[in-house]
Structures are given as structure tokens and as C-alpha cells.
Length: 421
Image 1 (tube, one colour):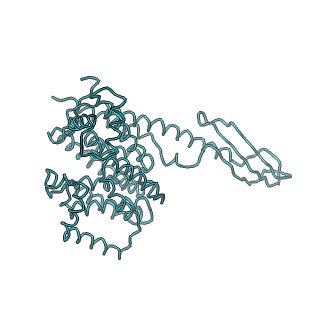
Image 2 (cartoon, helix red, strand yellow):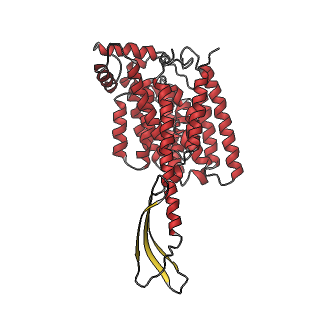
Image 3 (cartoon, one colour):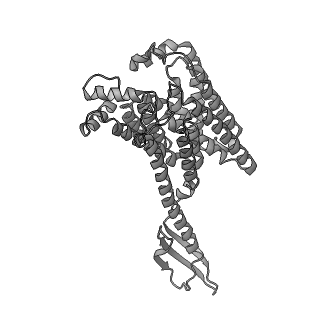
């Protein structure tokens, strides 16, 4: 019996447990220092008006600075309960520090399992062979950024030292995943649960280049939501130096960021029709950038029924609570359109090789959309019901995912590491 599967199970339990104590909503509030005007009755027939500034230590909540300017004629030391308000701000500051410690712990656990692997993933030894070709200055079918980074690392390592190279890419892949979740999630615990049981993290032990740029694309979403398109495009262009497929997110995320009206659904219908009618045109564009995919084992015309079912289920949940959770919420609306776009691709664009990878750029946002919807459901019983249903569904999927991980074309199990081999 292979016991390495318990490493994945224990890792999932640990990071979800750590995520339980992360409170991003509270920590995103301003804290640490209060400056405000207070006005109240001092109890001696006079109004007390003051401008108070309190600052509290994030370590223990003690007051380390207090400035007070009283208006002329004001008396008394009553601060109108303002000091209690500032102590709440100090609690927020402590929560920020706790969040950082917990999120750092999550990062270290995920990074350790990824960086210490050996012979995990069906392309692990393929990459090792390509590292040797790069070292010999021979041609490889990789983007220039990936080749340059590998050569730079090899210049500091001995011959055929591939483990540190995998570790470096693991570091940045996990870093961007964790930073993206910390920036975008409304419920970090739920989001980390979904990315683990949804298989995204464990799949990143395979396909090194692709999951690095997927993590960068997820991280860059915050710039789309903030309207900082220059930063977003620069991040995507940097990611494209490692995997050109990430360029598709520029138009896709732009479309998802628009506030579509019902009349705009005609454009969506036209886009679906074009995918059916002009398949050869789209394939020529794709094979211009990736000619080696044409006629390859990936060019099968097949799609994933599992991905269709997942996107359809999330769409149903979204439509049930569209008015209260999505319609006026810009972030959830962006994630909603990403999921809808992924569903369209899976259904109408199966002619694209590796369509699942293109779809992942869109449906990975479901790890934010699902918690974002559930947290906005006003009735507590419904929130609990949907939390239980989603948890059960993802645990079931996780079980199937782990069972398939032993397949020779996946090879994520058994897990091996170079420390205890």
C-alpha cells in the first residue's frame, strides 16, 4: 500500500486549519492609529469637543501615544468612548500580524511539499532532460524567459543540479498563489480549501511553466479590479516569457471586467457561433504560436465533462443569488463572467488543444466566487446548507482526483521527496 497519499491529505488539513484563523475582512480595515473628532456631554452642563489621536502597540494593544487638542473652555477627561474605539483598531492591527504569520505558515508548508518532490509528475524527467539541453545550449521548445532563468541558475550550480531549479519555480508558483488568495479572497479558509481539494495546487507539481503563469495570472487579477491595466499587462507580459498561453487572459479578463447588460448577451451568442463556424481560423492562430501542438497527442478535439459540470454548477449557484451577491459587487461579477467564459470555452471550443488549460485561467476564479456568494447570503441556514453542499462536492472531487493521480499520464502519486528517499 502506498502511504504517500497521506502527505497530501495531512497537508490539506493543516493549511485549511491554519486558514481558519485568518480574518482578511477585519484586517483590511484601517487600523493602528485613530484620529477623530469627538463631541459629547461631559455631565457638567458643557459640551466636550476634542480631536484625539491614539496609537496602540500591535504587540499587546497598549497605548503608546496620545495627543489631544481640546477646544477652549472644555473641561474633563471624558473621551466619549473614543479610546475604546481605538482599542478595536488595535485589535485589527493584531489580526493583521496574525494573518501574516498564518499565511506565511501556509506558504511554507505548500512550498516545502512542492520543492522537496522528486520524480513527481509525468513531465518531471522530461524537464530534467530539457535542463540538460539548455545547459548544452541546444534548442528547446520553451519561451526565452524560462530558458534564461534556467541558464542563470545553472551558472551557480554544478552539472545536472536540477533539484534547486525545481525548487525555485516551486517558490514563485506557491508565492503567487498564496499572495493572490490573500489579496482576493473574502474567506481565506474556504478559498484554500477549494484550491487544495479542487486539485489546483497538487496539479502544480506537474506542468512547471504553466502553473507558474497561472499563479501569476491569478495574482494579477487585483490590478484588473483596481483598474490598473498597465500593471496588469506588464505582469502578463512577464508571465508570457515563461508560457505564451497566458496572453489570452488580456482580452478575456478585459471582457470579464465589463458590466454586461442583457443586450450584450447577443455578442456572447455571436462569439459562441463563431467558435462553431470558424474553427479553422482559430486553429491557424493557435498553431502559429504553438505549431508543435498541431496533430499532437493534445490535439484530440476532446473536452472535459468534469470541468463543464463544475462550471455549470457554479453558474447555477451564481444565478440563484445573482441580485444579492453579484449584480452590484464588481469583484464577484468579474469572477461570474470568468466562470461563464470558461463554460463557453469547454462547450464550444473543444477544437483548441489543451482547452482545459485555457479554461483554468478563467475557472480558477471559482475559489473566490463561491465563498464570495455564500458570504453574502442573508439567511444563516442557507449559508450553512450551501457551505455543506460545496464542501461535500469538492471532497468527492478530491477523492476522485487523488485516485486518478496514480495514472501514468499524471503521476502525482506516489509522492517522493529527496529528503527521505
